[in-house]
Amino acid sequence: MPDYQYLGVTMEEKVCLLTISNPPANLLSKGVLTEINGFLDGVAKDPNVKVLILTGAGTFFVVGADIKEISEISGAAAGQEAATLGQKVFNKLERLPIPTIAAINGHCLGGGNEMVMACTIRIANERSRIGQPEINLGIMPGFGGTQRLARIVGKSKALELNLTGDMINGKTAEAIGGQQGGPGGGSAQAGQGAGQKDRLEEPAGDRADPARDAGGAGGLAGGGPRA
Image (tube, rainbow, N blue to C red; front, side):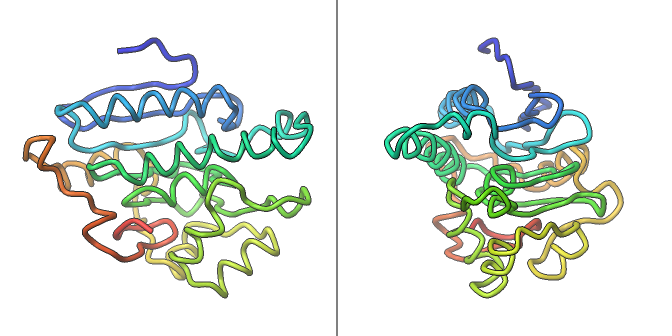
């Protein structure tokens, strides 16, 4: 297994737990996204991984992109390059031929929320704070969030969340999008429990693609087919 700077990877039976660790807030810097991109390439080829769980180290899930890096972008070409990297990574996550579970253990904002919307299942707890606050910086979500959010919660609610930058808790996410929660919701342990139920046993080449086969949209932070 590669030696990652920002990722923790553990395996229990055939469930892989990916922990994003870029303290203090687990920002999606270019380095973090690059490591996730390479990790996903490996998972896609590994027949021993039947379920992937994503969570954040500490009390945060992921609190968005690295604002310092964004502030240093000069020119449209550099901006497009940065956005394309995030889009590439999250598209790759969405297209994995195995179930993916986001165990949202705290603040999940901006790029963090865009990442979980590319997962098959989203599990959050009541202390989680979920949203797209980019508008407060004078920008819009650039990693596919405007598209996936509308598919998950509907155009009207997606516009409200994107245009106000409001954060919602796990309970509200459940109300608008079918979130899974409850005791232990958002913990890696809760995700592993879901993984035990969802594990696939067929050979890698025959794995089902939930995004392709379901053809529907799941909840903002809850169970259901991928957006």
